[in-house]
Length: 286
Image (cartoon, rainbow, N blue to C red; front, side, top):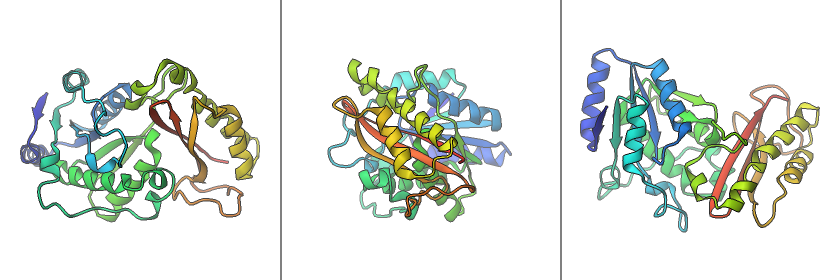
């Protein structure tokens, strides 16, 4: 495995991969890697001849009072995990190189970035879209891999890749979960014992809401009532948002009734569990 720290060196090596006729898969990450990331690496290795991974804790996607300073950065462990997973190129980007003095160009994706996390974290998706656009432009991969847990982020990245003609296929891969259903996340390590015991209720609540939809329920508020009844929000779990949206556009259902057909619906939640803000979702075809 090659490890680099210069974006120019990364660009040059990836250009050589492409010039040699090799297919390139790319997994952008913020590090603190876990089995969910490894599943993305493996998917890339199945579909591509070279797999490239980036690690960069992107400051511009964090808002005031969020966890940028405390976000875990286990560089040595992340490097060994990538090596063991068969990654070909791992690179560490620096804020000074990604956002040099005088930087003033931002990528803003429209409607799909506004609800859900976009409403709770108003600067988040501008930061995500800008850094992902930069990284895709540097690596020029044939395919890039993202986890479905970050559902809204996946739609944002798909939109920008299509709108900006980046020539990269965005692959959305299933969420990996702990045995009790909790979605794997780097932020799970923030959970104290009490919060960790409570956190699996997030998945249980999503499944209960899904089952109600599959049983024929179409009223958004009844679906969310079922979710809340299973989640049992209180001191241990606080709801940031719980919403039912169109799965392809993230538009809401203004009349309070879900529509059948198309891409289906996504039931999405963000929950505060102790120090951790956890997101999860489930896509349902009514």
